[in-house]
Image 1 (cartoon, rainbow, N blue to C red):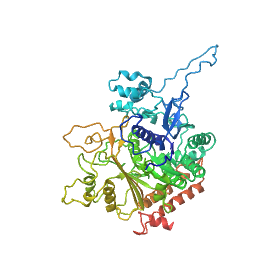
Image 2: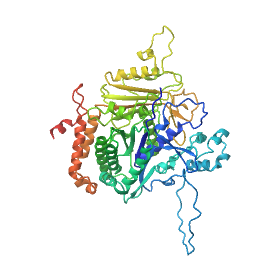
Image 3: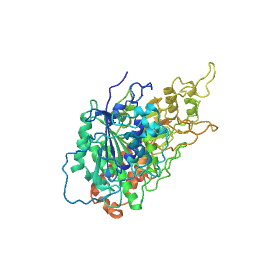
Image 4: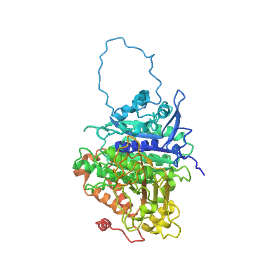
Length: 587
């Protein structure tokens, strides 16, 4: 039985969040089918949860993300803030100045090959390109009527090497955005040394005046056209001043839409250009203050980062056995996190048996534990021609996923609750094809369905954890301009291929993800608290406090962070201690 479409409004705050968000929307677009007579199987995910249908002044149907994206002056480059979907042509009735004129010419930002191809596509000039079939050209002839380049960029199996040319997130955006989507904060610059949004207090102070008016105007527009609004996805940078803005935005959502779900994902890149000890201190304080404030105002807060930690001395970034990504490139690291997010958010986007996002939050954020951690196997390692029990049977002492929240698992089977999604095993065997009378090599090989295999596997590692399992056959489609960061030992569907077969371009990927409320978050939050309180900002970086918060307000927030860490003590297994947690208790 199908479910009612419960709409979501997505909010992206900050440049790295818009990097991740751009990859995320490209992934959503790649999975959409725009042909009414398509013979493709019905999607397991409900696109109307995320997208809205509209109409141009000329009566052409549009399909755009229900999205508000905020960034700083200079962050758009070649992208027009209002987009191009609803253009009505030039106004020829405007009056003409007949006096003397002086013309100042400024070179426009240059476009990379991917953006140039998009321009050709929409102008109909792509007919000369041999990569396109007639059907594809017919499909993309209405670039406005169907505001996406999904079908046409399956011309796509043309590869783009954009690593050297991506400067901002719009350099690889493949879909049209609604004119009310982008909001530019002109008080601060994206580039340069002056007027930078560096500190938590600067971001907090922004949520007033013009910025607040623009946000409320956009919120009302997207929310009021929803029939069954289930809530908000907030992607927010937590390393800079957007951490403070995100805290105020989630507070606004909590106060105005308190009955809805507010799932906040705190984004942090592995590195920042031109970093310094003082800037790293700013980042640490922004992490700490943003985490506690956004957790307070959200249904749950989940940090998403490939950093090895949020402290001043993180361990090496997360590595994945079958990815060859460069963690210093935002274009690469954001792509990995977008793949994870595509899996982590499945439960409230399903076509059938979907549960609203507040159900996920209620299951995970119990007893005040509103910070959760994410883990992922990207891709999920499964060999061509094998079965799901074969793939999982090798993980007897370890788990196939890696930390996506800079929080390592404890490995002792303790977890308060967990939501696990495996997607992308289309065409693969989910159970073991044993002949009658054959003894199964492991208990997993006797399971009768894919869900049972995955559940039984997780029960061996987490014997008493409340568990939700979602299994989808359709993969994440990684069509261009998604970076080809994959091992040469993967086939086009992201499965491990025999080494004697030639390498392929990967076009889709199986992903396993886990969202956990775990005792491991206690030491993680305690470490964040200790790092933020180890140095006095009045001495190390007095400018951090120049626009707030007051030192007393900051101390109160950090005390709340410490109290939150104590919520993750596991009475069943005794008190968890990190290296100096006893010292915390004596303070």
